[in-house]
Length: 302
Image (tube, rainbow, N blue to C red; front, side, top):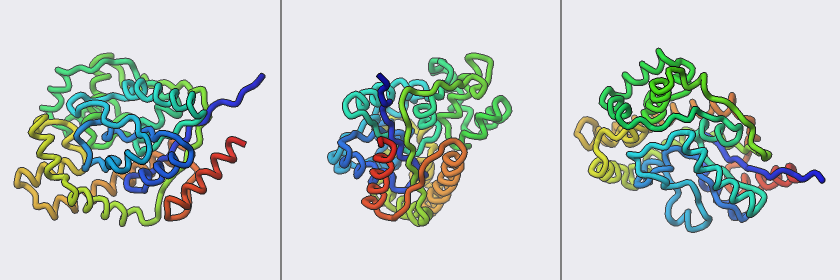
């Protein structure tokens, strides 16, 4: 007797596109947990700068794959997939469906298309040396050693840059040449958000994270983990560091964070167009978008 394979629903889109609010509405409607696929929300103490769902939002529905580690213990793609797999399977066993939400394209691809990175354990001493070398130099090294990986890793993404160099150092082969695919045993429905007012939403989000405490959060991270923490070079935190050191005015930091976020959103949109096949949602309100999602889910389930 043939059985229908379970369904994994993927809510994806560029930063500040409204994924959090819609994911909560959808999870409430379907009695599902929201499984996070945002690479920075995996870490504790990084709440404001990553626009992590607030405690109030997390109280509305169960959220998984948040706050998995301290930010000085980076999670590579293979480790994330190993952590996410059981969370997905638990939801499939419970409801026959699972809901992934996030904008980290490579992490999504790993789960939905079975992208399998090489099994190289972390190299703490190498990571320390790369941190001292600096992200600009590390990314240039990656451009020379593995231009395919460098093209899809942002110039400010220290964590993924270090991981790619780590793989090259450990195996003598490029990361891009070692990644394989094995399709997962379930159906995937990808739903995409790409609002027309994306730039305005980014500006609003940027002002909000500074107003809600990005600077004290960054100072707390520096105090706990040191100013050389690679994740403190990511969008928002990097600019906040410069404010705290007196090298940048807060108004300048806000403008720079907004600019970097727009650039990130552009890269994300390009990735989703090339690497995924979402059904792009219409309407401006989460309730309208949620209804469209439910219609698409009903269509797939037959």
